[in-house]
Length: 240
Image (cartoon, rainbow, N blue to C red):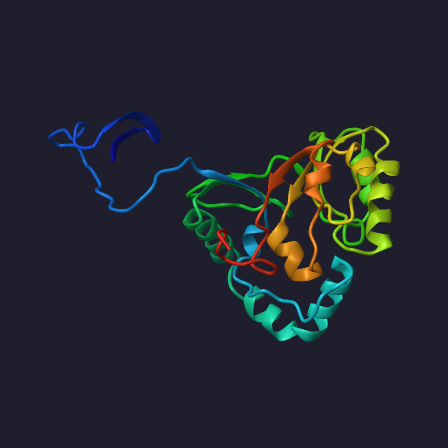
């Protein structure tokens, strides 16, 4: 049992239970609880966390999945998109906070986050994927871009085309920008050497593809970070 004193949002002191309580100080007493540092979620789409998990079968790649749900689940998607954007963003923040996440990296368009309860990181340049990001080859090589770090869905599939998309990024990254790959299910160690890091999203990968990135071999070539992805493809509960 421990007392934890917090001031200005930071842990200031740890001491045996009952030794830090001072008159006039606000305190909270927890039973059967643990304290742990805030987690970092390296990949989420904050405005997509009011969706249910949408998928009707196991897919070969994200392109198949995207086409399928737009046809089969069109009404469900439309209902969620009618919810005001600020509320959808706030719900995504609630999801992260309730899972013990205090820093989340948002992937996609720059979002205006009003009164964030946690740190929302949006300083890297988001590219969606080779199939869904128009003019991505130009964007990654644009000479006057401020951000030199890009995050992009790559290798999100189990077929040869998903592996070829990774090769295409390596070939067209002419100025050798720092690229952080997201998913990397189709990535091999030789390809991994060309990237700064991989964001691994196992729950999302297994739901869509029934397979995930081979991180036990890729981690010899690159840093591995963990992401939840949104509730479109992963559970609300990180611990699942």
